[in-house]
Length: 513
Ligand code: AMP
Image (cartoon, rainbow, N blue to C red):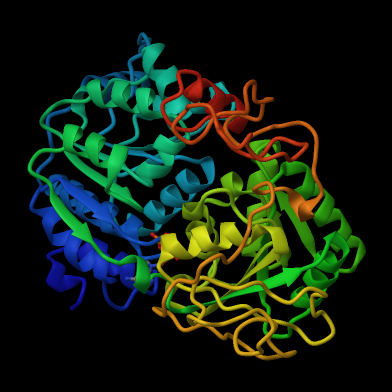
């Protein structure tokens, strides 16, 4: 199928062709015609599937057709003309026609820059990002131009709404991008408030890794007769990405292996994920000393510094980006060939998003997780979530002293050390048989996500970067039974779930205001 056949305006077909898109991706094939028909959409599709164009192209198509038949002028446009004539006009709020809400600043900037590509041959369509971390005066200037499209993170948007700088009465299209992630970050109340400020007549498109649970409930509340599109099942995800687990004995083993892996001659660019901001900085420094062009990216950095780092990555000046989950969400650099999980993510969903930084736009990628022997349970959780076995690999010269423990995909009857399943010979690849019966026992997790099995003090959890009072909070906001992870520095991230402080903490941690 071609982009013309989807029913898109010629200016948009031309723009996607200039962007190098030859044919629509599966999510675009399904979402674009339904979006053009004005349907509300609930879409679950994998990261890197072309979802931005899936919601942006039908919206732009609507605006392109409105260009032919100009809509009545809005108060904001009248004020703009009066200003152009030199008349003094009181501030009038921006009245966007489309709002895209994203969980992170990086994703918002990504969506805005993709929109600029898609509107290259359209007149009068301006997309701006409204983000935490950006100076208010600059945002006021952008809003004063009355852009048709706002791409925003919820916290800062609420600030502008509450101070009367934005009026959603003219809004025609609302998009929630990575809705699951926004809820995880505690933005539910902000989202509800924003949605309530938009007209009921709007078209709503919600994109999410999952449409179950809390996301599904919210999706049903804010959409009307939506078309549900599910593109990739868990098992089909990331077929173009080779995934591996390497077991390591200790931190020194892990660092030596990281150094070795980053010298792979097939590596073009890599993202190394760490659990904490402090580790991201430290590892980037160490890699620089070792001769890699490395840079850190995390939520403590000012937005300007984050943008500069990402630009350097896009230009190929940075070869190895050492990042935390929050900062890396939405990074779209097609030349990233490798993702290394220096620390495993706390939640399996984050694993899927992390490895999705490679294998973009139809290319192949490699995703390697460096895992302590005590972290096997966490690998299992990821495998259960992705419905895929992650093969264990061993690099000659970097063999762990302890043989790899039994894995969930191991054949029944296997015993440690029988040579069929664990402790693969140097250079030997996977031993797993997806679909084979689960094994009793398997990994024993010793203290969750402690780094390199060394117990640490502190009790900071992911949910807010503050000491957990009674064992911390779990994903749902209730007290954890296991005491939570024990990294001595806060994990990157805000309060999750429905904990009352969640939104504030998410914003504070992400600097989203
Ligand atoms: P997204 O899922 O929107 O983040 O897109 C992932 C990557 O795929 C981006 O680099 C897009 O520019 C690219 N992309 C989106 N649609 C297409 C298409 N139809 N053909 C080729 N590349 C695409």
